[in-house]
Image 1 (spheres, rainbow, N blue to C red):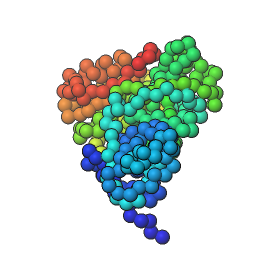
Image 2 (image 1 turned 90 degrees about the vertical axis):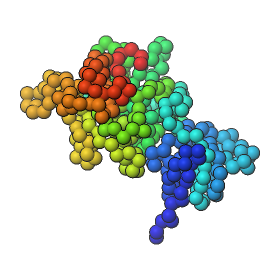
Image 3 (image 1 turned 90 degrees about the horizontal axis):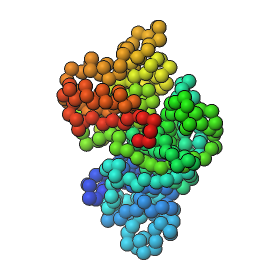
Image 4 (image 1 turned 120 degrees about the vertical axis):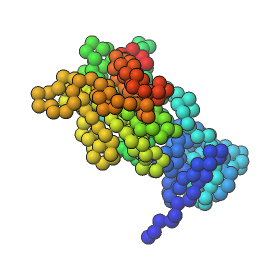
Length: 348
């Protein structure tokens, strides 16, 4: 049996359009098309995704009365997280275009998975409460709110949508490197257990993909600086699949030894299947290593005598980010095309 053709949705004031297949909510279809609409809970309870139907017919779905009053329904308002089109639609809605458009939340979360992906790197997946979602831009970070009043910041390693990842969007992925003597990372590696409850605040930070540029992208990671770049790449592949963005991407990942490239197979998969150039660089290479060696940002310089046409996203230790800024701009990279997520052991 053939599926009915999708309904077309036009957004005002932006004029952007996307299709919604049968049975799919307006919010899910928009996110799948690479269009960021505001949302909070995704189940009709919070009202963050509210907008106005200017033309067309809509099924309001399971919108709760507390989030969408009878008067608002009469006035043509809807919650796009649970509404589905019954015809082509024109909607009035505020799109999310930058980090400042996303509310910062404080939420409890539960440790869903702990996986030691290297001797000194733990991948943590955190599950949000059933009726909450954390809207964020790929590359942003969260902070753990600790009992002693201190905070610890970690970048999100997944993209904010689930379609390019086997994990639903109620999970947040972090890559935590063990810092010997560091109270929080000692706890992560020696005491933390699945089902532990933690408090987080986020999303935070201005490290996210600038989608309004057509420039080729350099992604430079040191160690667990790979985490936010993984999110950026997943997001770029997702919006590239919708035809919205197809920019060349080159990933350079620096580590001490081969074990430090803790998701090397994933990076190689991107290179084989998605055409992303991938260059691993080891500073203390294993005896049988035949690849690039030295400092990762110097490998970029060796390959690119002129960086004036590029946009760079750099993530790692302060010394690496500072050296990259100095040396990339000396090679012609415009300063406003350099974006850094500096990993330090103090709060960001």
